[in-house]
Image (cartoon, rainbow, N blue to C red; front, side, top):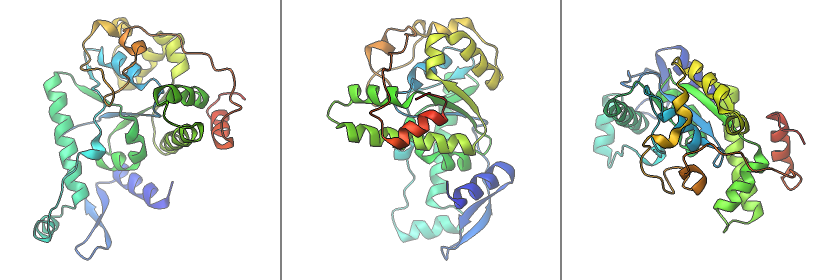
Length: 273
């Protein structure tokens, strides 16, 4: 994590200021605009780590709205020419801040429509922009979902058979490294997929305590609740998630095929060699 990310995140979380840029392009401190969405929860994980399962369980709680993957990286405010760029800069808005306002409005509106009070967002790709999310919503809370990197790689290989083993490992390493950086930089609550799949009751109870809500045992029967369209691009689309039941994780026989960096990360996360 670079020092600029560290400074930006700490400024956003602990002061009413954020790093911006003046019309001359130089960095400067600016007052952070208010947000409509309060204390959103972001779930940071690699792909194929069980994030869809966790989001459906949480979405089954009467107070929690956990929608499908939202892909905010592709939802942007665009300044088409110099006139509008100058006009927005005169108001103190960069293209990034305008995009943040758009994200905030969309998520706040979606939460309001749901009739619930807590929003949990789980797009794995958002893990790559964890510092930006922390700047956008300084009061955000974070869940970190870990899974054995060997299991992630095996699952990703099944989901993307067109990828070579090296490509699979490179993509898994990228996601896992981003999760590791976010987890070291931001306060939050960590969940292991293996624990969730083997005995969900205490795991979800712990998540509910973190969110400040009462645990509801019916959450674990997530298949009884509507969760929107299930298809590729919006989350897990496989038969295991469609079953509506929490299933035992597949066994991993070896991590020896993993590159050294991923093996080291597995050890750091508590997965033995």
